[in-house]
Amino acid sequence: MFDALHPGLFVGGRWIGLDSRIPVGNPATAETVGSVPAGGKEHVDLAVAAARTAFGHWSCTGPGERAEALERLADTVAAREAEFARTITAEMGAPHDFSLQVQVRLAVDVLRAQAALARTFPFSESLPDGPPARVLREPAGVVAAITPWNYPLYQITAKLGAALAVGCAVVLKPSGVAPLNAYLLADCAQQAGLPAGLFNVVSGSGRTVGEALAAHPGVDVVSFTGSTGAGQHVMRTAAGTVKRVALELGGKSAAVALPDADLAAAVGATVASAFANTGQTCTALARLLVPAERYADAVDAAVSAGSRYTLGDPTEPGGHLGPSASPEQRDTVLEYIRLGVEEGARVVLGGLEAPDGIPAGLAGGHWVRPTVLADAKPSMRVVREEIFGPVLCLLPYVDEAEAVLLANDCDYGLSGAVWSADTDRAVAFARRMRTGRVEINGGAFNLNAPSGGYKLSGLGRELGRWGLEEFCETKTLQGVR
Image (cartoon, rainbow, N blue to C red; front, side, top):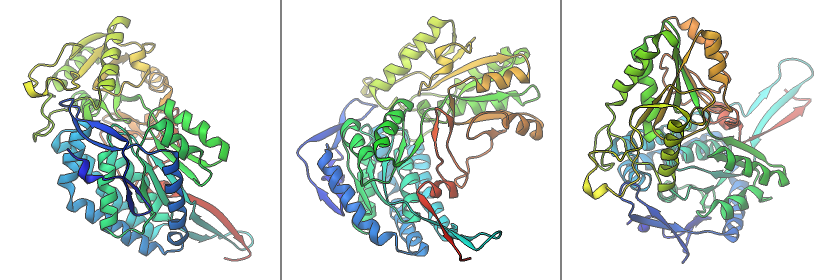
């Protein structure tokens, strides 16, 4: 049990014990592994008040002092990386190696990158033309961070690090599916010597804690990551106080193999993206578009690449996949697979059957077979809607003009990929895609590049200097350089 890590809500540098608790389940075993406090509106009020008090001092500190605090926090988390990895594996099912290398170490890298940015960010710049004027970027105030369960620690640090770097204070509402790591991070913040009230954690339901934060007049910015429907609700709730809202929402990203692409490489990378974290990634490449004349080869390559992915015990090392993070998520994925078959898609890998080879002690877990659907059509719901599970749809196209139309024929625009033997050709195609990020021939993730989406995928950007700007107000001083 993990209850010892979080004796209560973390507000104003203190732990507030509550009798009302929310159980946290292990998705591999369906057993309860811990619980967190069920906060209410009154606890949101306390946390926002503590954050406003901390903000008054923190906003006056220099960038170097803020950078040093973030570096201490990063060091503290890194020193406890094994504990974080075990916690995240237990609460959301990511296998041990993935939890350690991606869920935890990526979060540490984010904190270090934002500490470095704090030292170089243009908080003040003089305009070179016209009458004398100086532009200031000042901390916006108190940030409400509402985070998801799929990359829980990374998503927290992406918001927390940027907000602290520019001088804001934060109230965090973690996901109810995977909240344990948030309290472990709060313990690290205390250990690293962050000022009391600068980082507060209030767990609870979205309807209670999330809505109270979004509507609170003492909150200046809401940064939300989650489903599009929930993001729309947050935006409506926040509108009454005319506060800034940043949203990272859903995705249904397309990978496009152009006619001259290395098909095996394109398919292999796309399958890896679609199945990573058991498909529970908002930027997952969930649609693969290939030339019609190479479609049969692409299907065979997808089956071959996908067959190498197995399900296994998340606590064991190795490259296997874990379970869906909750029974609700598993049922949603299975329903989409069933719907895809009903709509006419052909299951060429995986499907609805119970997975083979799951250890007896894990038989009650929330398992879904990694699945590839061929013969998908653009109108199908499995092609148009976010599934958030290990399901890849393959579609043929006739020419590049149709490939562009298919890639953009989507309500989302978060990520994408293009493969071609000619980099310039791939870049030209990528510029026509209505999406916030495009991987060119498997280009690696850059922590200093902005991340965010077009259309229903959200508003604003995280990471890099663009992520810091989300938590700044802009002021002009006229008459001075």
